[in-house]
Length: 162
Ligand code: FES
Image 1 (cartoon, helix red, strand yellow):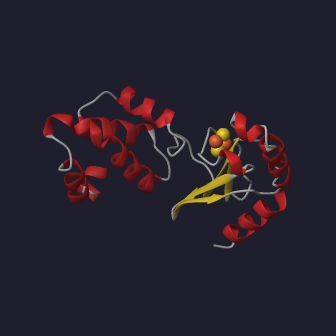
Image 2 (tube, rainbow, N blue to C red):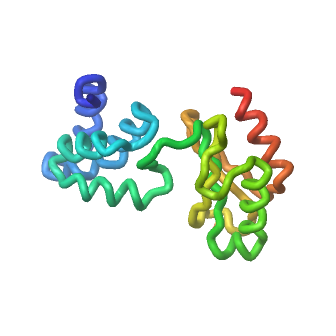
């Protein structure tokens, strides 16, 4: 349980917001839950909702909206390729398709070794530098811009060795 393991961290997070605006702490608490469990489980959503005294459906809607949060088990590294329209016009769809093919998955799937989940996501604010992707993992988020399948595969090879 988050409240037992991270009691003081949760209290200090809640203290940053007015007592009647506890719901504002939903993002940091979801981040905490994801770090603890690897993804946002149904139980974690309920737990965060209980802490913030809001409905679990409200928590679920936030998890569903942000590409930072996962409601299912996935790879150790999330390779998030922007496939939004401006990037698609610069070849992002083909890049994503070819990268997936190189790693034997379809977009949204996880490699057999559970190292990578390759996903298509909406705008990551680097529209003029497509094809681009971000890597999300325990170390944080790292951007890679103006990519080719070969350069992306090299990034992934380094990550796989970690
Ligand atoms: S549309 Fe891809 S980064 Fe903006």
